[in-house]
Image (spheres, one colour):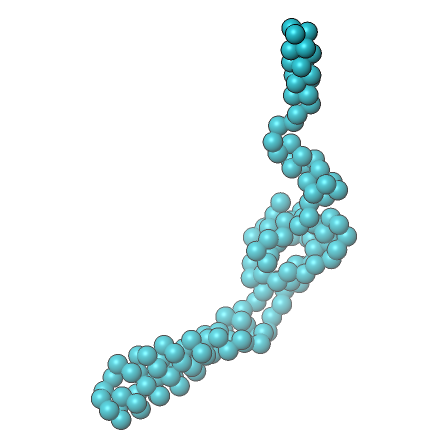
Amino acid sequence: MRMRVLLLSLTVFGLAACVTSPGYYDQGGYQDGYGQCGNCGTVEKIERVYGERQTSGGGAVLGAIIGGALGNQVGKGDGRKAATIAGAVAGGVIGNNVEKNERSAPRFEVFVRMDDGRRLVVEQPTLDGVHEGARVVLGDGRAWLQ
């Protein structure tokens, strides 16, 4: 009986010695099972882009809603209706202009060669230290220094 317990104990302790600590393979080891980080790569090129991008219309819609709500707070009867319509129109124009100004700001296209061979382009408003040749991680729709 003692021999059986002793053999079982030695087996358990022997197997326990083979266990690695948590996170061992995520720290530069076998990150995704293939020795590569699935969303890591190297910046090949960065281009600064100017000019307007197409607006989505969301600024105009939101502006019209807010303008109409504010216009509805003014006057009574037909005056209130006129103020609501005027507020919606003015809010729509203002909202569209705000969105257009935001979309015409300079931005950067970052060309990344991923570790798995893919080539991706992400567009972001700032570089935050990212430069050609830098190792980056792609997340939240942009490149971050690794």
